[in-house]
Picture (cartoon, protein in one colour):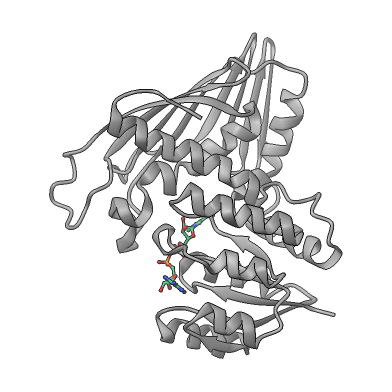
Length: 320
Ligand SMILES: NC(=O)c1ccc[n+]([C@@H]2O[C@H](COP(=O)([O-])OP(=O)(O)OC[C@H]3O[C@@H](n4cnc5c(N)ncnc54)[C@H](O)[C@@H]3O)[C@@H](O)[C@H]2O)c1
């Protein structure tokens, strides 16, 4: 029996998942929901499913095994909860929203209903990340430096604080999540930010640059830089340092250095394809052990990134 999938939100990243899923066997793309009707209709025409503008109607009319929820941060309302309550597995794009309270309610429903969940932290599915985790096993991480320095994504909601939550919450969240994946849970967050460099950009209210310091429960520390002001000279990745070693992770690349030895790993599997494959396998079998980022786990990353915003606003460290 093919896995029957529906989409909530059929924008840029949904299209990316559709391009991966369309080539897989045992998957049927049966329904597409978007508040912009034409987007749902176009996807339905291309993939052979039905179009909706209201997610509950889609959940009730279609017999879905799973829903891909690919919404902008501000738009998360009851899409996850009403899927979980109906026993529909959910793949949710990061960030899972802008409200920890709402996310915790969804996490409880997922637990109670035993629903399969996965969140689109695709960096966790890189071969390079697997190797970094293997190297770090049994080693004590000392400190880390993380980066998401670049330009702004083109979607209008991104540049509004109430639309995206800002760059830390929407984009650099991948690096915060990687830091948790490699160094464990965060105990305290402190952050500073600046504005004023993007006066020419209309309707812009996110920070230009944010520097966030993390203290981990293990005692490790990290500094993560976010900036959306430059289309040149950017950098995305996380470097972890310990006694006499360094691990430098960036998209599909890893460099491990020890005295007298440098190991470089480049390329590897497509992490988007892998996260989709693993999710579908979990839906088919009910065994979630291959999923690297469950909804419940992603709540912890959301808490850390929202704490960074709070630390900036209140000018003090925030305990997690
Ligand atoms: N993992 C990644 O690498 C990655 C990459 C890009 C985007 N994302 C994440 O994916 C999410 C979506 O980003 P995007 O770039 O696809 O945005 P987008 O604006 O291109 O698409 C979002 C779609 O959701 C629709 N929508 C809004 N509210 C809705 C609602 N209530 N019901 C149904 N549809 C609704 C919009 O009309 C739009 O078509 C964001 O959270 C973003 O952070 C992840």
